[in-house]
Length: 324
Image (cartoon, rainbow, N blue to C red; front, side, top):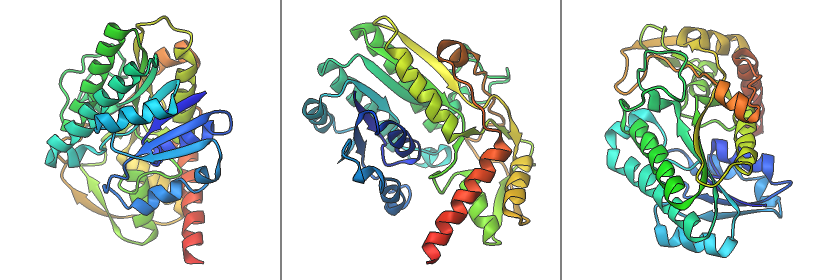
């Protein structure tokens, strides 16, 4: 099968591409957004670029004509749309930029898919759409019309646009709400990657709030498994299907316990710089994954302590490579 994966050079996109490339033809799209060092994304692609089933287009998904050209040239059968301007706090500084990529870019892809006759589409949404929802765990039927950051608002908008295209054009779409994904290749700005690096270097880590904020941290292997299962599930659905699914671990970890897990894995003590809560940050994320479990057998199996240990091992291997 020919599959377009947007954001293919990023954290989740490169891991998904590596999982699929042995059995499918992968057409990657990435614009190498300067949000973080381009070399990190290039490193993510090292093994993929050697594979005959992988082809990368460096392109901006918001460029509608360019996107249509890629679709017409490659004739994909399914789209997994992972590309986005990422980050809650940066979106407060650049709401227009986030809307351009995350909303207009999603429309551009849906239009290209429609014109190319593609029926199957997976959209990466986010747990951020829940805002400070008080009902826990979060279920897909929860009220999510009160996002507290532009990033969250763009992800909610993306889900609505997907629903519209499914209704109007008979597309089969799964919108996946990812919950704080971590693991090998994780973006350097995210908490586990940042804290691991800073604790290892004996630098002060930024610690927002009193440590009681909670996140549902989801290991990359579980996210990839859930995504591939949703792709298979789409093929069994009638035209005009659009469903939203939580992909999380189904457990929460406080900020204090997260730091303790990283300290244990590194064998080093953190130096903490206490700071106030930041605008746009939610107090808790907590996924009810029963809908995804029932629909396509999603079963997250990696506990945070084990996932952090695996991440630290990967981090040390990469650090060792850089020191040679």
